[in-house]
Length: 553
Image 1 (cartoon, helix red, strand yellow):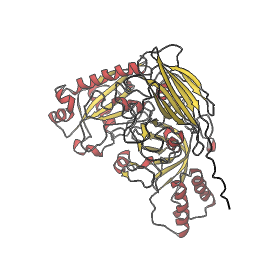
Image 2 (image 1 turned 90 degrees about the horizontal axis):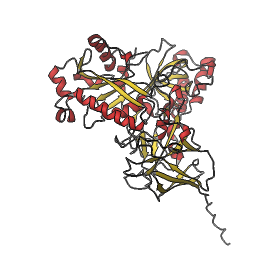
Image 3 (image 1 turned 60 degrees about the horizontal axis):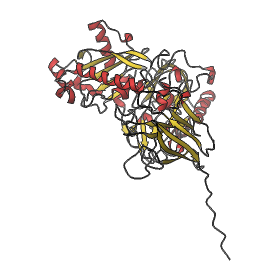
Image 4 (image 1 turned 30 degrees about the horizontal axis):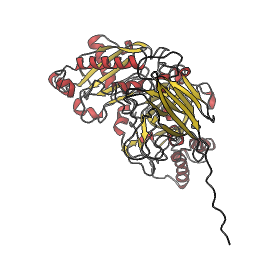
């Protein structure tokens, strides 16, 4: 049986040719599948065609080819390296973009598979999601899953199993929630070694090695930020345990462990967090089920390059302790747990201004312009927007139920603005609301469910300015919500620097059309009136390029 631990050891970084970014996770991109030695000419031809469909993200065609040959029996069983599957799958979605599934109705294939899928971002960590696809070369090619259209029957009448992908009730992101935090050391460490290894940066200098007091201050800092960001609607009540030397976890090999593996339905028994929760129950009589959120804090593991890792869609994350501030990725990983993906920016092309250049995120393909910076957004902690000034972008606050779609002005697809507005927008980052005043604009585009979002910021911009991002969102996804990777609009078009802030008297031109059919829309930020920013939209007719006159004979 292939364990999650074994898979985590196999994950590796790869270099991608062409337009595809180098150093992306293998499961994040469509890569040519490894080709084993052919069994026969017939198998070789068939598998080459099947892999070509997968490499081109032609999943429907690949599924038809796979299923057809199983029905006709054209090839001998020994040649059938792809095996169709239709049934429930457990989805494991990690904050680094890794997506895996466990096929629940097939005891012959009990392990975890890295996933190729057409709509990867819509999948949150969830049990028993109905899916259809096939296994090939150690991967699961997902052609359909019920969570894309949960109210529509899929192949064979499959529906998503009852339950929420975020395992939550309606107030999951409202009110005061119980937060469990466990500082973790290896069983091979002495108490002194544990304390010393946890004492990084601020813990050593400002807190004299007291990691528990540091973590209390981290939660206090986060609660202040969350009270502002949620308009007083959300916060944590923390339980922080003393450092725990966890049986079954060795610091000497800390880089080889799966750190985040506990889920309510199928916890990985050898994951560090699962081991820590089991030991907590023995030593303190506490159960993980008594808490809404939980995190383990590792004594700094030198073999781990990340500072935080967590589930996308259910509570559970880990911090690899680097205490350089009071937000050591805490709020970033919390954002993943409640359905958010990363905040990025583009360094090439129109640098986020043309919606078609960002559509690759929803089609699970490569950037047409290249130059994507995964954590490049300056305006959100899901990128590199530092707290307390950086805030979750507007669609994130909608899926968290901190604001609603009704608080936005919605510009439909194809509208002609001459102009639209002006609109007076209240700031989104002050913690205060102005009744009856919109909190942002949502501009529909031809790219699936991807919108341009216009919001008023005051802190990260050091003054009132408009910030524009593009992102797809599903506020009713799995009883919760999900926001895809957001892309920050950069008002600069050249150079290595970025500038997301559009101040009064400035204008930025967006392209809200499809590739090859530009539809310019100007965003005019005119003035600040009583703390509200005045914004208008203007669509601009594209003047055809005149053809050259015929030459004289």
